[in-house]
Length: 400
Image (cartoon, rainbow, N blue to C red; front, side, top):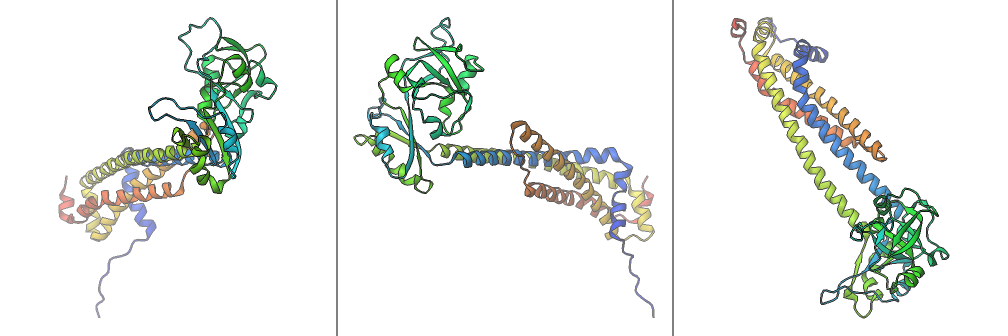
């Protein structure tokens, strides 16, 4: 009884070894072919990682500061003029049941800030002067970078605390009794400098002085410009609904109510949209890399026709030749994907460390990137592999 001849099966290790022949014999071409894939994956992993690290840092900051801060601002009148909050706005808001803390700032009109009295009047730098309550920092979650904050004693004297941007703009790096600024024509001692405020960024470009000295020295009318409130987390929406009417019962439409953390959430949404755009660009680079691999594999088939013919004449089947070139394409793309993922992760860690963030490299981004490279490699190598397997031994051996 004559048995049916069956082609020998190659173990997986032999399949990989044979598929790697082209990579070992032409290493420079392999590196250049994988470069496009590496760039695409590195771009996608780095963009996703940096964006994820940024969002994680923002979420951590919001968790520490809370999302229960609401503000009530003096808005506009029906005719378009500037509205004014009543003198009782702050105390009225404090009577709302779920409100846990209140504070306020009031814009001191025509109180321009200068480093000294030799600065030209028109070069004020756009720095605003605000009268501030002594509990402002605890309510807004703002911290001091150096010096001391206003207290009931210093609030009655010409003492100022500068926002982070204001101090930088004026060239002041440290407070002290001999460090002064001119506010509204009056010399104020700089007692402190604030850190950048996440939930109250308007404080960064301000000079803050005590409420009593603003009224007695600079002619401040005492009306708050913005009232800050901290409410019970579960009842923030309810407080927001009544905040305007409570601050100004006669004209609630002239009060602008906002939640600073909403602006940060909108920033996150914008960051996600931008991340999507950059990931799209990375995908284009990945596609270009795939085209490069396909081109390399087609040329490899043309150059190695003699090898293909020899393997076919020695008994290699169509499937084995096809598998050889398909594995070679997958190895090219896989090596490029691994290199790109490593580069992207390293870029994420480096940038996050530079910014002082906790580095976050999502595993799904790395796994998805590697899966995408293998898919691109499979598609790119499919046609060259099929073409190689269809070469007849005689035709291939006769090739020059």
